[in-house]
Image 1 (cartoon, helix red, strand yellow):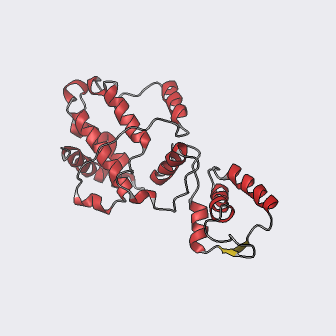
Image 2 (cartoon, helix red, strand yellow):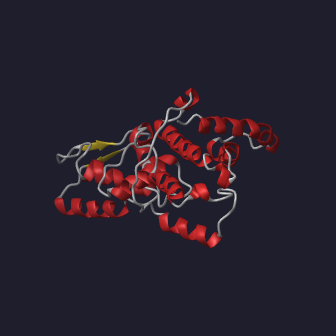
Image 3 (cartoon, helix red, strand yellow):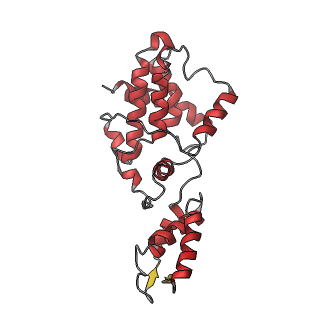
Length: 240
């Protein structure tokens, strides 16, 4: 697959405007628009001289299919959330290739995770009995989800910790999220006298979100539930 350099400035401007408008579509069309915008129209990756050919290899096609900006942060992969936040902060940023954002431990914690854990701390979550166990009003939950759906929220600082060896197999960004969340749960467990949420209770709530059992057999889920809870409890207790 190849594409000739744009033959004249007028057509070049037309394609530039077309791809610029569509590069934030949350699908492969958006990925293709980003590729055209950055690699062809802006001259990054060949085709600067008339008559040049811009070759699209298999990796380029994979980039096009996988590199798009999600519409929101709910239900997205960790990498998708990091990409959404990147372009929410800077709409002119270059599209990182697949996997690049997952390789940075320092920036691996999404702003939304830092924001939510800080909000629980700041709003006195450690003083609330039954936190995470008692459901909020559906209207309140829906309103909050809609408010932050698009990724337009303030950036805040995050912390870190040393994890177990098993965490070394995770991508740095995924490991950073586990570290951040477990540190937050460790602080919250210190208020168990008020919240009634001990380390074990917190581990029971969060284990299904941190550990995904590949089996779809409910008997297997039941068999491993206690072990998964104990493992998450150990991760929480390991925080300093």
